Image (tube, rainbow, N blue to C red; front, side, top):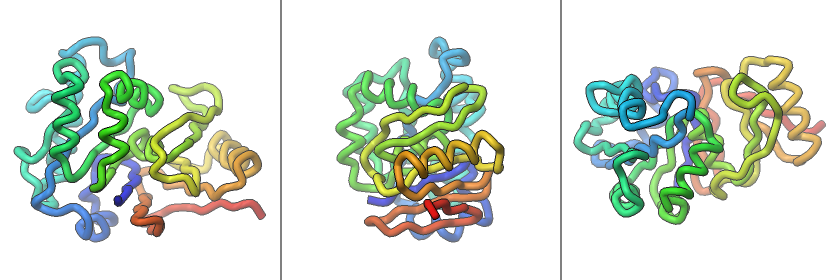
Length: 223
């Protein structure tokens, strides 16, 4: 399995493209697990469609366009729709895919909806590429932390998938006091490395346990 931890959906950015083209192939089929949306923003199918539906979705075109630079056509990409997919149809999309793509948003709500739609086991046993940005990056860790921000006013740990268990991840790193305090707390409490991917300019690829840092990524360990 290959895990790709990103900052945003512009996976065709010049600083990232050369690294990812070794993994993302024109023949690959993609399932976009679009379940990280905020409850305050998405309350029904129309709201979901405004984010992820073809023609209307504000994130749809960016995701599809960035994948097209790797030779993946729109017909090879399926979005899991919280409002129209059943557990059966959503699991089938996962089984058909070579790449599972997790967008950003709220990671804890994404995990809750994954369990609700009975997708956890299918994702857990996927043997291809797991690719995600922001929330979709941190849920690839067995346990992840979230620094205080507008969505999460208090520091906390959460459970993700047990794909990665040897480091923690600080996404969208800008060196804020809140982020630096959180990193130090994780180091003291968990005694594991923390990687910080700098805002829209860092990525991590984990392949069979080997860690490859792309762009600007800071590494923190206990002294």
